[in-house]
Amino acid sequence: MGLTYLKNVSTLELDVNKCTGCLMCVFVCPHNVFEITNKKSQIVNKDFCMECGACQKNCPENAIKVTTGVGCAGGIILGYIKGTAPDCGCDGSSECC
Amino acid sequence: MSYIIGHTNNNIPIVTTNLNILDLLGAIKVRWSIFRSNYKVKPGLYAIGNPDKNSDVLVSANYKLSFDHLRKNLIGINAWILVIDTKGINVWCAAGKGTFGTKELISKIQDFSIDKIVEHKRIIVPQLGAVGVSAHEVKNATGFNVKYGPVRATDLKAFLSNNYKADKKMRTVFFSFKDRLILTPVEFVGHFKYFVFLLAAIFILSCFKNAIFNVDFAFSYFLTPFFNLTASYITGTIITPLLLPFIPFRNFSFKGITLAIIFSFILLLTNQMGNSILEIISFFFLNIAITSFTAMNFTGASTFTSLSGVKKEMKIAIPIQIILFVLGFVIWTITRFI
Image (cartoon, rainbow over all chains, first blue to last red; front, side, top):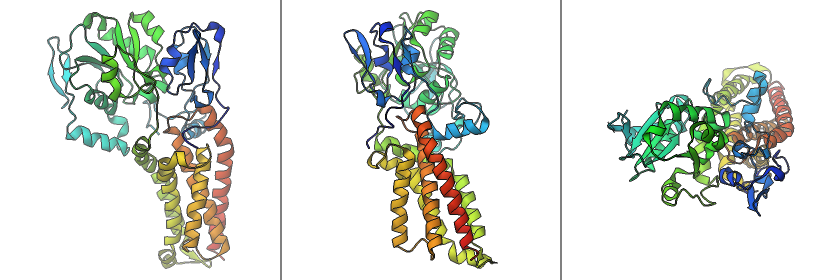
């Protein structure tokens, strides 16, 4: 219970060798997934990861990989019906879900 | 625009930090999903207070709710607001789609010559915009250093006066009761037309009793399916979100199933599930299916679900919901004819 989602599903991966400890992943993560120890980042709360991709987007060394996308049941259904990737319609082209 | 109260020397609109009655009514309106996709602010540069070449540049989406929320938290501050074109969508959703993105931000920084407006090289972007903005790419293209501001605009003043440092709490997204409550009207309104369609279909089928068609049968009987279906819809779209952390299971669909079983037993004990065993079973199935499906859809509005998790949840939940809904509907229809 509480406000955590499914365990062991996150596609988040960190290549520590590429990490320079710049702290960007710590600054942008909304759920405290990362912590810096000894000038290197590490994943400390992988099950809190919602795959938003902010870390991947802002890592200047490309040390982070995660599969992002609309994490919404309605969006997945809509994408399935339209034959596209999950789509919530919120890119302004049509009515948002 | 009622929020523009003047212009600077170089014709940049000055906006007020006050929200008037129109702004408040507008916020309520969009929270009920009324013309939610047409509540926009014109992208561009705005001024708050009396900003100069040393004042900070704060980036906003052009969803008016986002813009209003930002400006009302800037009382006493002198700053520039750069509104980028997110097609009227809020920061986090637009960032996820890429519209609150690197390209758009670079383009607006260039179009509005921010390097001529301020002498420093800082630009403050809301943290949730980081999903779509690559800070190092913005720096390479424009020379501006993106500093990610706190998640909530209410923490902005503290952030600005603390040398652009946000503490752990300011960087964390929560999902309080109030946060969840504000989202429920859109959940309720979102599927409403399908719900009404289902009620109408049930009403028409309620005109059948012992295989005879008579509208009077529906009028005397309809309250039973109405209670069950409405309880399902409200439990899925409102109650499950409100009680979210207190309901067992991590899957939203299973949380819905749990509550559906509970209220269905309550309806059973108060004799609201009809007369025959078949009817009771059919309502259990329908209630579980509808509550589970609508509860599962709340994943789109929540702040902690992931794509991988939702996909995994749906693999189990969708077949259950389809089977129970079809079985429930068919069995219930059969009870109209026996």
